[in-house]
Amino acid sequence: MTDLLEQLHIHEEIISELSAKKLNEASNADASEVPEFRTPNSELLHDSIVALHLNKNLLLQGPTGSGKTRLAEMLASLFSQRIHTVNCSVDLDAEAMLGFKTLSERDGKSVIDFVPGPVVTAMKQGDLLYIDEINMAKPETLPIINSVLDYRRTLINPFTGETLQASEGFKVIASMNIGYIGTLPLNEALKNRFVTIDVPYLQGDRLLQLLKAQSRLRDEQNLHAFVQLSSDLLEQVRTGQISEDAASIRALLDACDLSAFIPPLRAIQRAIADKLEDEREQSLVMNVAETLFGKQ
Image (cartoon, rainbow, N blue to C red; front, side):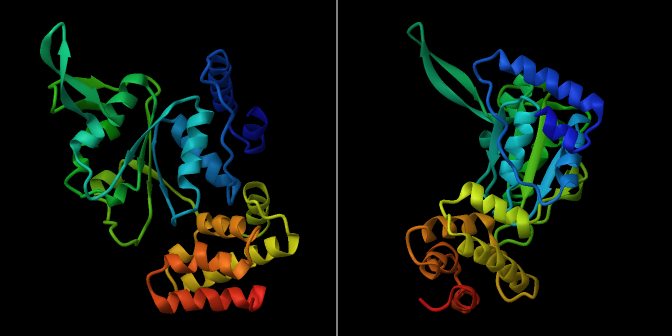
């Protein structure tokens, strides 16, 4: 871990803090390897580490499949923290974030217990709270945690009446996809509580190394062709010809895995094209693929 931080030219104060935490973690049964995140540029990872060290809330924004969740997991590991996740959707409510009451039996009597949710658990334990796809939640749902996200780091739990102060080390990372169906603009008061990091898709040699490391495909020629496919699809996204879903690195990895056992064009159809709802976009993806892999 120290080698990685030094390569990123992280400040000595931060390296010292993280190394001390990692040494302490090594004595616990929960100690684990740092998840690998291949960054498009070193500044992205460097600035994320600095922001979290300064107890800033981090907002990772980028297209689907660009590695935002993987980056959050890596940061949690670097800071030796457990990660508690809120999965946002239009159905997200206070109970899903904070917890809920349930009827239990104790000593032969019925009692009401409170089961803490991810926000309360992360605050109490000084862990990392990860709010996934934060702009999928309804705007009226999120203000309940505004005081958690500012300098106060407090929460008045509406289910228990308890005023909760976050324990030392509590950190927050959120992620969002921009412009996707079902997403909503973030309230300015909420967005101002975050430092924003753009997480773009990997390209070129970095993408090639990712495909070699994480896919089942070993054919060198096809690996290079998939890297070019990603570049060509991204260009189609930039010109508005296809949606960003078609250029997802996650989908590209699926296609590479499949193509280790079935023809690449069929793999691309299953993993990428058939996920798109627009038939014109499906055809365009396959046309681009055929220029690289030929008709099979």
